[in-house]
Length: 267
Image 1: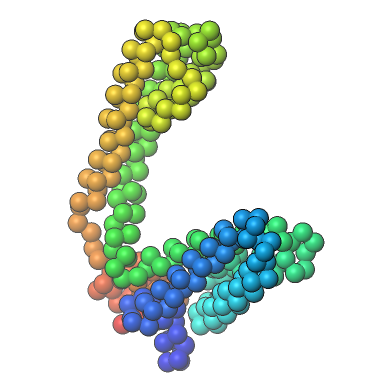
Image 2: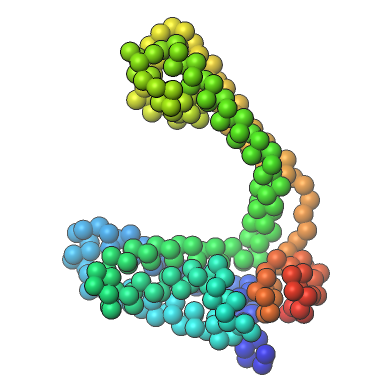
């Protein structure tokens, strides 16, 4: 890769340099403006009165995204790997609706797909100060997956039991017309949402509902404690360097070679 391409690669794909951070911040601003235009356009009065301005703004943003997408394809060593990657697909979907609206009948309805540009904000999480925090949280969630899965399974069993008992106590005359509807009530009550569309009328049912409400606070605290315990565990620092060969971007600060494909990464 020649020096110019390498410099552009560092700016677009990484955020360790001043230029890279500036590029990501500018990209974030454009993404937010683009999403704002989609939201504003859905308001009937605004969409009708300012349709011309909205279309011009949309085409300017689309052209910017198209140029960025093209540059990303040009500077990577393996374009197809980027094109079919998660970010590559999102980048493609962020520009294609505007062009489809020109050639397809009813293609204007596809413009709502532009909201997928919001997913491009995930790119901004590679900024140096967010990298460690984001990956620490992801590691904590992944490490807690088995405990959380067991906890969720336990909660499912609990709401089935509570719903069944409440169905037997209250019966159809009080709105608990079936066990599934009673389970729905148990979920709403246990999560402390409390829609109020169905509630117990008997003293025994209200007593059980009180117990379920109290249990709800304890149940909410359990997954929080599980994830917090994993968060406090030490983790290795990562940077934002992206392998030019496989586009892997989870490297330790002292890494010289890509941990996925073994290629040398940028110093």
